[in-house]
Amino acid sequence: MQNSTIQLPTKDKRIFLPENLVIDSWEKLSSYFEDLKNREINSVKELEKWLKDRSELEAVLEEDMAWRYIKMNIDTTNTDLADSFSFFITEIEPKIAPYTNAFNLKLVNNQFLNDLDKETYHIYLRGIKKQIEIFREENIPLNTKLQEESQKYGAVSAAMTINYDGKELTLQQASNYLKNTDRKIREEVFSLINNRRLQDENELNKLYSELIELRNQVAKNAGFANYRDYMFAALGRFDYEAKDCFNFHEAIEKEVVPVTNGFDVEKKQLLSVDALKPWDTAVDPTGKPALKPFDGGEELINKTITAFNRIKPYFGECLAIMKELKHLDLDSKKGKAPGGFNYPLHEIGVPFIYMNSVGSQRDLVTMVHEGGHAIHSFLTRDLALTGFKDTPSEVAELASMSMELLSMDYWDEFYTDETELKRAKKEQLEKALETLPWVASIDKFQHWVYENPMHTVEQRYAKWNDIMKAFGSNQVDWTGNEKALATLWQKQLHLFEVPFYYIEYGMAQLGAIAVWRNYKQNPNKAIEQYMAALKLGYTKSIKEIYQAAGIEFNFSQAYVKELVDFIKDELKKI
Image 1 (cartoon, rainbow, N blue to C red):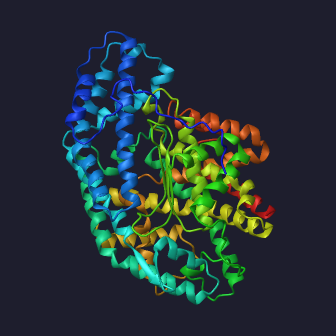
Image 2 (cartoon, helix red, strand yellow):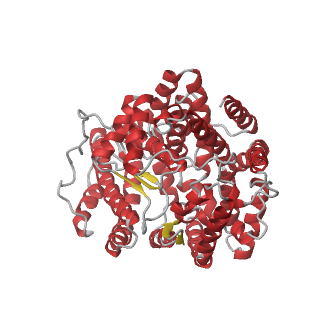
Image 3 (tube, helix red, strand yellow):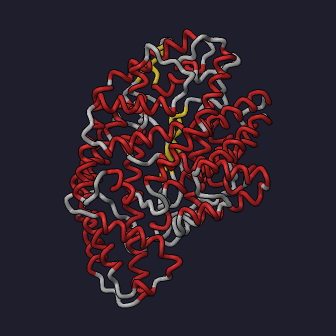
């Protein structure tokens, strides 16, 4: 399922670092950091050479750490892989941090700084200045400890399995039973999954409390009132503020929640149940078995390549390259950490897709989502600096979430039956809206958590339950499963590993709906704009990148309503 004439990318020849560098000690790296720190820069040309050498060093280091992280997640039971990752974050990263700050200061204080092309470097330099502003030497060991502690979440989650139907199942595999048309089976599996999660409830609460305490200290050290404000600076959120997030929450509560509640009203009626229970939300309400778009990771990637080829041949070629280079690990297996991601590898410019596929429709969506990220990586491959490729999440998730919708017209590669294809599309459009209240919930929860870092576990649960009343379904009856509802947030990896990285999904979902609306009107133009936006990397502001995609960076209530109405109209056509 790939073009035999495909051109496989290779790493550019290194200019600054040796090709055979093995990073197994700081001593092997220190001379390159010292060179950059102490090098004399006597012209703008020399400054640009210094920036490229720094960029090469960053790319090599990021890619080295990426492989350690990927391998550790694929097999959490292998202590050597865990030790390899731990070595990097404890022995290498803490030593890099002071140099990074020194490089930043060297750059902004350089006499030739203003001779750099302003259009090219404005966004990059804006971020560098913000890094200088928040850097504190005393936060280096705290950030190292935070990285170590946050990785515990993946290990705890990866160890969660249940025994059912004579098999040991990962929770991802077990979740497929929640689509079973036998309600008794759904309830049994829901209970097994929930009981298994609750075994680690206290451990995850303790871990989260420790992370909150450490993060709060980092914020205080940097002179911020709370960790939320610190993270807005650390994430480089120049295009919006906390109050904009609150406006987003309100718009979702008013315009989206009533619509998603309507989906559950219909589901309850079709299922003919007195009470819609949590184990009833994933099943097809018309009594059809779970959608089965593919069987195994090999079939998943092959069919995705074909579908992407039909959108634009370049898109399919990107995935074919990744397959050929074995930059994919798609199937769920015991000992593999949960979740899915596309990890950019900036030196070779060919990313890695990691998934926990079990053959579900959700996995198909995850594949095209991560495929969108991958295409983004390919499109930014030739940008001059690593820093130009580090796009903010609001843009990165636009690439991936747009691809979920853009690929729908080609899902006949997975579904030859028209009825099944329509089911898949309907589910996707409903989930495009159902994503938004969950994103608002997680984001609102984080704002409260870090505005009130001294809260108790009981207060945490109470706040989450309040948020669920506003954003959860008013049709789902959690009676008898109150603890499952109160701990639902523990399923969200982002809270533990990448705090405040979540509202971007909501902003990007709105953007993706707008991209797809453009695509329905003029496919070629929409794809052209989509690619033009992604090629910018992070050389323009978020608003400018969204404009290049032919859409707005806007989450006002009026705009949200406009996009929700469009999805409702498209659902009627299916």
